[in-house]
Length: 312
Image (tube, rainbow, N blue to C red):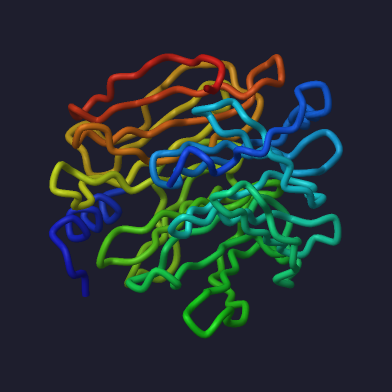
């Protein structure tokens, strides 16, 4: 049923329990609206360029290049957090529109963004996106529907397919987190109505409890090893103590571990590989309503962390 050694190991755990010019068109600092309070950022790496996006106080989406500090307005009007997804050299942005439909725009490496388009549905929180592979055009978007269940819509070479219901009962105000494991497919982590975390993966029906408690949308990454083979699936959440927590599911020390901080939103996370060592960059709003980051490198089973500091 599962193709890789990594997937078999992860299944056992569950059973037991690109360019610097991407956002080069900067708005003036005085005209750039601030992040809306209580709404999480989104994050993605396009090549070597790290981009953080946020829903501003006026509902528009703003994209910040962390290498240059340049901020590009992507427009739109979202009522929850944006999801950033790198599709080759293009940055896709998904979000919950003011009509509760799933909205999408794309930004080019030159810094321009297309008009927003509706992908339909009736969603209630931040969506998530992940490769569904193996072709580059194959990716899926996940969202909590108005019936509280998890829903998905897949994009292929032929365009968008219809909405499909995956079930479950997600906590009000939270969305899913998704990540792709090479040759296996996407995994999705959700928050149940009891505030506990659950994971669904390829070949599995229903959801498996993975511990932890949160009332915010989580984040999920799949980290590769030095041979670029996925070695661990890593989840990040804002705990009920307002600190960030992580769980590396296929590790010598599984379970949830604190990364500290005082967060006011759920986290976003992106994956980078620096000198063959995978890193997760985690982002969230702090108590001053600014975007903070914490960088965890996986040179060992227990990550080295930078500590929380202003993003960029």
